[in-house]
Image (tube, rainbow, N blue to C red; front, side):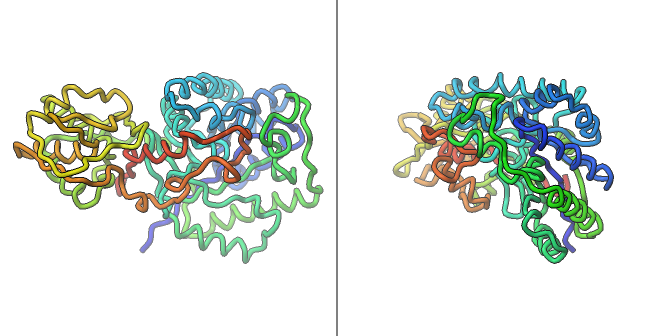
Length: 449
């Protein structure tokens, strides 16, 4: 029998241009509270500042019943996260956004009275790999609304945080909200391991997104002098709120679902046991990677975990405590023909290797250059008792079909795909390609964890 699908209700709370649409934050927070559901309200830093300027203490009170996440400092104000981080120099890209996103957390905490910020929802497709590392380093265990998820929405650890995608947007209820449509939607959601149901509160009232009007391709207006969206009628707005309430009740009454929260998920992630790879674990790990070059499922290890364990064990340690991991900044090199490397050569290469952050794309072993996957499998061979290892030409990256969500592996962040609208000068020279190069950091939650 299939276990129940976990449901999280998520609210991208972002429109800092309109006190009118801010009314929807209060209403939707109260609908969930009245229905006994804890939602996740993902706040833009600049919005919290505006809400204080508007004197919206009612919203502060309403949000105390719910989980709080960050939705970035400024959402669609140019330069966006993608624009600030599409650089060859990772450190420069990282520092371009670290302080502003740290500031956003301070603003949100101040506004909410010190709420535990349990995650991030990056705006639209601002799914910069740099941003992923920044938000993880800021202590946020969940990265929601992400492209890094499985077909059945089990979620995946990626770039040091747990990523999960959005599965359904309730804005659809403006066009279709009859019971038959809702039941069909629930049938689809029941196929998922976890489903995040989202909405943008401002869209309960506004017919168009605030950033489409004010930040399409550039900062269209002076800050504070924004254009307004046309609004739905009072009857249409109330019908939308009624649809949300009916949908929440349908989810709660459907035995296929369990309503949970971001906080519950974050607490689960934070409570997971420390992961340790021991030398005696390596034969089983080696056998799994030879069969399928992809994360180890039980226990949960990413390929970078195993690589770093091999480095430490070739340096003389007998175990490796898993911590932060990184992928690559450039496409890994691969051995061009079959060759043999010795145990002594691999030990020397491990001692010379710098693995403080991103992994090396090419590794010198003796008189040969080999790729990181070549090195990893050779290291496992000698750590399992052999005096030498044969390296054969092979792919250095995992099979991308396994992760499932095509937005990750076929990602292009330039052109018409991107939302919110990026600057017309945005080229996506590094972000999409480097996103794929972080797949060595991917791993999955252990079954039963």
